[in-house]
Amino acid sequence: MSEVVGGREVDVVVIGAGPVGENLADRAHRGGLSVVLVERELVGGECSYWACMPSKALLLPGHALAAAHRLPGAAQAVTGGLDAAAVLARRTTFTHGWDDSSQEEWVGSAGLELLRGTARLAGERRVVVDAPDGTTTVLTARRAVAVCTGSVPVLPRLEGLPETPHWTNREATGAQEVPGALVVLGGGVVAVEMAQAWQRLGSRVTLLARSGLLGGAEPFAGELVGAALAADGVDVRTGTSPERVAQRGGQVVVTLPGGEEVVADRLLVATGRRAAVDTLALETVGLPGDGPLEVDDSGRVLAVPGGWLYAAGDVTGRAPLTHQGKYAARAAGDAIAARAAGDLGDQVPAWSRYAASADAAAVPQVVFTDPEVASVGLTGREAGERGLDVRVVDVELGAVAGASLVADGYTGRARLVVDETRRVVVGATFVGQGVAELLHSATVAVVGEVPLERLWHAVPSYPTLSEVWLRLLEEYGL
Image 1 (cartoon, helix red, strand yellow):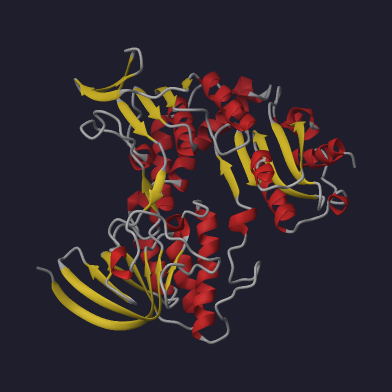
Image 2 (cartoon, rainbow, N blue to C red; image 1 turned 90 degrees about the vertical axis):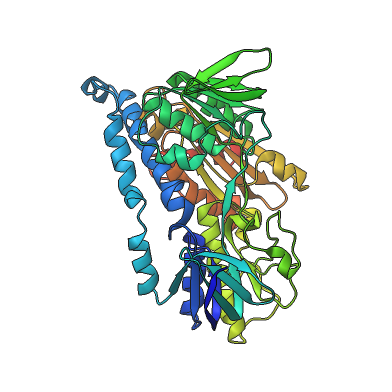
């Protein structure tokens, strides 16, 4: 039985010290409130140690090498392949060797208190924290409890999987050596990014996707990424679901319909993620324990009376991306502080500092494959499903002068989704080398609801990739 070592009050308790929890805690503290951050793993969270940062560190050296090969003059100077050991070593510098001491120092410098352990709810405004040393602390929040626990991988119901060693994103981004052969299950962002990273690092990768690739994006995005993976040597098989997996002689055997076997050294399961709520004891506050926490735009959990429970980030299911989680966290932290001061009521104005309004209309995302996929807002299909009067405008990026300078034979495409009634851009997608840096201009256009006639006067510099904006608006008819 654990020993209860403390029971005390604090203004705000934040469960989860990843980037979302850190931002929410910081904003609440800036608003004059005392805050305790609770973390059971590493301060800095999934993005810092097992997702965003290490995955991009694995990908970008391969992108740089491929980019050099596309430029005559540079191509002749490149005579070798990637130094996999050097890439893995550099990756590890971004995770600080999976040591969070610098993040812990930041928590203290920001005026926040860190409590390490596993937190669970215990009724209204109460949080119980079980520490690794077996002691228990009971916290009572005067103002709010905020859940920022992120998400965890979803594993499919696949015969043999529980008994077969496999990677999730954590093992895939943290591996210390290149597997000779890798099978990837899934067709989403983690699947395509890690398939390309490990193929370029020297593994023989087979990617098995139940349907197509990048199913939530514009269809051409998955098609172009799939073609690039295949050109890299990845064995891409869409419309394929394995029947079972097993371990045999130190290797993984994946059996496909019809009996074909794919044998590999490692298996990466990248078939989605779900809200991390398993340890929270949500039933103690009247919530089901198996789903995302539905919140309003200020982060308040709708199903809990009293307005004291908040949530932000992946655990809400709204926009499961680090930057969107941090955005929602800033809004929630400011809202908690404003309500504590009596400056904000239940109703929150849209697009105010207290509302994560962009979650519904202007979520930017980059898939860091080569080619990159950069998108914001609605796809053409989504816009139609919302009842908008939609017009879709496409341009081949290779026809833009700036793109032809970036690479010989540049391949890519750009799309604008226009609401014809209001004559504003409601969505944009760019696929190609280096297009991530185009995304913020599109995000500003969508969030600002800039009329096309005014957008026409935002003149892109020549010769840059941004000239695609001129070509898109010309294609529209301006």
